[in-house]
Length: 431
Image (cartoon, rainbow, N blue to C red; front, side):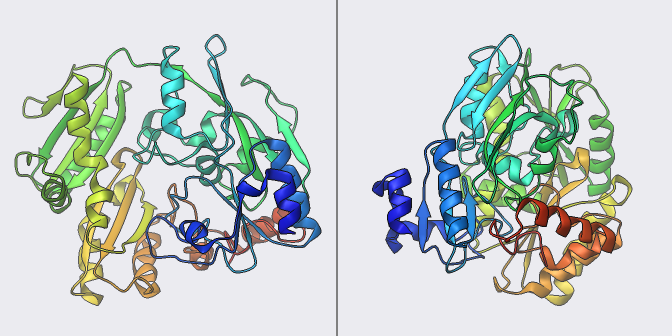
């Protein structure tokens, strides 16, 4: 089979050396480590199809990977599986008239932003890992990022898609316009499917005009509740693009690790970005020029980097109903401390849409009881166990808490229709 794969993609794009494949065996958190025996890197849609056909003929499971920034073991392979690295799929075309981009699965979100900006346009999905996360990976997880409050998740940006099924069949539908009611919408189904239904090879994506100006404000609050109330109000303002919440311990850690100057002391902080300086509070730190905009965003975007210096981190990306958000943020450190007195709890997120990134350090990386404790606290407050990073392997055992038996049975029937032999990303999205 190795010879067949080498004949398809070239011997230099089939890796079996452990020194090379090791980077494909773990996810970004460092918590989840598998075995990457073979990594194959196709360079065209046709090569992806041929690789899938070869694996199907040999009944060999496939694990698709992009930037490998998963936080839930969504792309961690096991022994006997072939990693299909899609980063060589670098097609990128921008149509400034139609305001559409066609991007290969391996194009990073940052590269897409830069290409769109050359035409006075932008892609509405943005996230801190923009220069690593890929178009294919963000479609697979239906990533949200920083601007969901105004523009929605990745699924809302998808006009069309190209993909390869488990048997090597290719499917493509890229109409280039919104009004296309010709049956089931394949892009919507593949968005969030985490590589379990097909290998996404390309996408047709909606672009929007660049902002006329970027105004970023950082404001401190005396309590979490006050920050959440203000963040909810800001999210309702049609000029606001992003509303991010940070707490004092996280901001202090970021400043210690990165050397950023600390902002005025507060219990909680809101970082908002809008297209207009109108309505900004008098006590906010305001940035208008690009350098200052980047500096203020660093308080938020460097949280993950700073927390990672403390060791392997339990990352539990969740969403709460807005009325329960402040109570959860206030309660969850105590919930964790009662069972894990030495743990550190670091909370931040996209407050405008109820998302919270729960990060816990100082706990054994294999301790799943911690995950159970936090996720049940989320569900008890009518929240959901996954906001934008997917379910992966890490959260599969808790999926039944937020999906009914009828829904889970339907999931299995959809999986069987696309991948009857169970060759695509086995164990992901399935308890």
